[in-house]
Image (tube, rainbow, N blue to C red; front, side, top):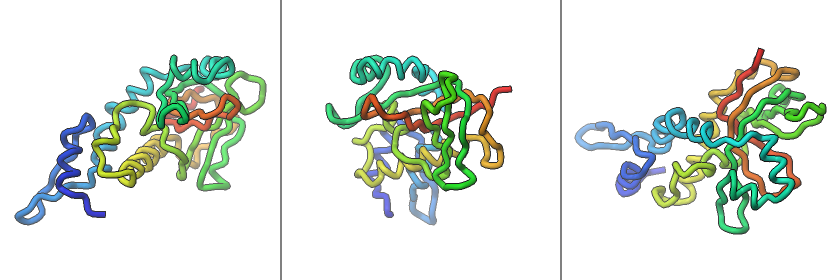
Amino acid sequence: MKITTLFVASLLAASVSGCKLVKTGDSEAAADPIAEIVETTFDTKLVPALTEKAADLATLQNAIKRSLDKAGESYGVRVGGAGGGWNFPVKGTATVLEDTRASTKAGVAEIDVDGDGKADATLQLGPVVKGSALRDTTNLYDFSTFRDQIEYAKLGRALNDKAVSKLPAADIELKGKKVNFVGAVVIRSASEKPLITPVSIEVTP
């Protein structure tokens, strides 16, 4: 897909600046702007922002049981107006009950947060990752600076791919391990089990 000069200029002016121009003969052509945004913001801006603002998952889940909207006002960001879900930065420590990466491309870890032996949430491990929680949970990525919804969606997928590359390799079995995690999740109903997109998973001794 051809990226117009106007689009590149708007990206350079946005808060997620960092796109570089490279020479191609006598003209300047942009390196992939989406890739540039991800490379220049993921480690330096997105991960620190999620880590700083992350709510403890167990605390958040208790708050959601009382009122999703009140929990959202305290800990989250709503995307899409009153009918949209709440996006939350989250962190926690949990035991991995199941690691499905060996059987599916949309690999996940089912995790037990409260120690009752039951799965309280799901960590997406990839390589296929659903949703755009990483894109939408902070104010780093402003839709108005992108050409259209297609480019904005491409950013969401690129952030997910980058996150997967930071997680423990598929040959590291997580089942039975205790992990610390930081990530983002969108919640639309107080009854749903959180499907978290992690930016870091640390296996504890």
